[in-house]
Length: 388
Ligand SMILES: *Cc1c(COP(=O)(O)O)cnc(C)c1O
Image (cartoon, rainbow, N blue to C red; front, side):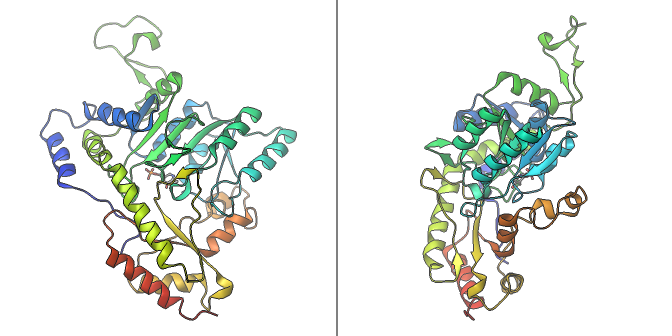
């Protein structure tokens, strides 16, 4: 099976992890801060906090922004469930904004319309989570302007977008957001096995996230309620978690970061090649925005079902049957049973549901060969053979 995504681990990556195993620190040593430094250097953000997953990063980001009971978090229905669940972890309510039919990101027009309505009804969101789907940045300038007008905070879910750029600047610099989150799961662009990071330009948010990452415990005298009792002293001043990243993961992250640009460049090569090879088929190919450079985590095609004999489901299973590890990103979150139990239903977000009925993620990863890509294209051409 040609997988839809796969990590690329070099000998240097392996050596970096083995060095940590032979060192004094398996966790809370020098590699975590080193990885954070490399993320700061790459993105230009003021602070980076590495954690054990993007899900954890989203959670501490919401907590640091003060999200809680009675508040609303809005995100896109076309995302991994974690972008929405983080709101529920904090006791807040979650709602969705339908997607743009070209980029599949949160639609700015739909966001604007929903905000106007929410203002009248008195239920404006406290936090909005735009998701850079497939790595293509959302229109952050427009979303940022709306945040000023309506007073919400922004967490960019950039789990797909490390290495990407928005108007020439790295995704993650937080120019248009309060916090940006990355994921280092193995299918993503760079990996630490499990892992994630939260970046911000705010000293206050960084301090709060650091507390939530590690039990709400501090060793900084200025954050304590009384004089330290001695050199051993620490205080728990918040209810936090253990979301720390290990030294093995951080060392892998530092090593992987050195190849980030080449990872993304290769994805662009493969994507351009797909664009050419698939041009004649009854498919909607990914739309790349001019002013941004996608991290290209995913290459998503949409079937023009009115020109194809087979249903979406059948195209999908025939491709799998031929060893092509196609996937679907994502099942609209509001149609998940857990969310339906909260009152969401089919029909709530028509663009998202239409996308779900047509989308297929094709295999794309750094080590994918042109021969493998050829196999994907041949299988797809064959399966779609019965063009109406
Ligand atoms: C992968 C992913 C996450 C969760 O990342 P983990 O590191 O696995 O917790 C969140 N949001 C999006 C959009 C993702 O793709």
